[in-house]
Image (cartoon, rainbow over all chains, first blue to last red):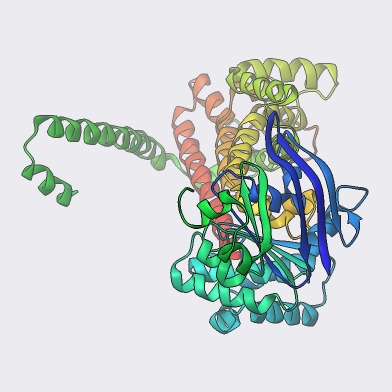
Length: 249
Length: 284
C-alpha cells in the first residue's frame, strides 16, 4: 500500500532549484533508499517529508505531497505530522540530559505525564532500538556518556517513542564505525515490520543490504526508481549504471 | 610549566624564548597587580574591622556598614529581578524567533551596543531626571535599581544571546522532529542547554551592580539606613566607601568597608557558581 505519494515536486532555496519535478511513491512497511552523489537533493527531499525544510529560510516548495492521501503542505498541524513521521539525523543528536529524559521527551511533549506509562514507553522504545540491555542500568546517566553508535540507537529509540508511522533516516550510519553500522542495519530490518522507512545513504552496499526500493538522484532529479535488486542488477538508465558501477560519484 | 621549560631548552630558537618570556611576564604581571590590590586593601582594612561596624544603625560616632550591606544585597536582588527576565526574553526573541539579519534585530543589537558604551554617570543623570524626578519616585531604591537594570540589560542580553547561539541547531532539529513546538523547544531544550552561559552573564552583572557608584549617586539617595520600603533612600557598600573616603574623616573605615565589599563579591561569585554546578549536575 502506498504511504507517501509525491507528484511534480519542485523545491527552491532562494533562487537555487534543489529538486526538479520529483515523482515517487513510498510504500508501507518497506525500506526505501535514496542514493546519489552529494548535493543531488536526496537529503532535501527526505527533509520535506516531515516539513523540516520549514525551518530553512528561503525554502519554497510546490507540488503534491500526499501522506495517506492527505496533503502534508495543506491545512494540517505540523507538530502532529512530525509525530507521525519521525526522523533520525546524520550525526547522533541526543539532548544534553539523561538517557531516560531523552526518550521521555517526545511522549511528554504529547501530554503523557503518568510515571508508569512513561516508564513503559521508555523501556519499549529502548528495546525496539536494540539498546535496552546496554543502558538499562544507567537510565539516569547523561546520554552524552554513550558511544557514537549507542547515541545513534538512542536517537532511534527517541524517534520511536512517539509511535510514528514513518521513520526518516538521513545517512544514519555515516558517522559510525562498521560494527555500529551493522547493528543499525540489523535494526532497520527489524523495524520495517512495523514502520515505513525512508533512508538516505551514500553507501550503495548499504542500500542493497537493507532496502526494498531504491531511488537514484542526480542534480535534483530522480533518474530511476525501482526494486532495489532490479535497479542494481539491471539498471534501465545509463547514468544509474555509471553511478552504481562507480564510474562517477 | 617545568615540562614546557625542558621542551624549550631542547629547542634553541631565540624566538621561542622571547615568546615564552613575553607570555609569562604578562601573565605574572596580571596576577601580581590583582594580588597587590587585594593585599593592600586587606592590610589597610582588616585592623579597622570591628564588631561595631555591624550595628544596625549608622551614627556619627560609629560608621556602621551594616545598613549599606543590606541595601547592597537588596539592590542586587531587585535589579536582577527586573533586568534578567527582560534581558533573557529579548535575547530569546532575537535568536529563536526573529528572522536572522532582519532590520529590527540589527536595530535592537545596535541599541544595546550603544547602551553598553554609555558611561555610568550618564545613567545616573538619566535615572535622576526620568525615574526620580519625572516619574516622581524621588531618590529611592526603586529609582536606583531601575537605573542599574537599564545599565546591565545589554550585558545580560549579549551573554544570553551568545550562549543561545552556541547551542547546536541539531538539538532544535531533534526537538522539532519529535513534534515539539517552538515554545517547548526553547523552554525545555535550548534554554536549559544555554543556562551556564546565562549564569556567567548574571555573575558579571552582579559584579557591576555591587561595584557601581556613579549611576547610584543621584538616584538612590544618601541616607544610611536599613531599607524599609521601595521608596526609601539608601546607600550601597560601594557608594558608602566612596562617601567615607571623600569626606576624608573616615578613611580607615572606608578600607574596612572595602574588605567587606570584597568578601561580599567573592561570596556572591561562590554562590552563583554553586547554583550553576547544581544546575549542570541535573542536566548531565
